[in-house]
Length: 78
Image (cartoon, rainbow, N blue to C red):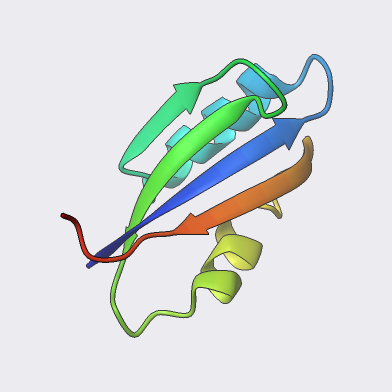
């Protein structure tokens, strides 16, 4: 399994709705509210052979109220 981090910018006033929708998918390991340019930060574990872009497009950014996303891939820990 590889950890993927996704930051989400939400439509003003919709952050809690987006967070609730993400939580209900049961696909996310961790979900945080953040300050700054993005509103939410989530951590997802994907199988090594799973297509990251397809997973994000099909399961995350398709949720109403998301304006922008930033996906960070991770590599070997030190």
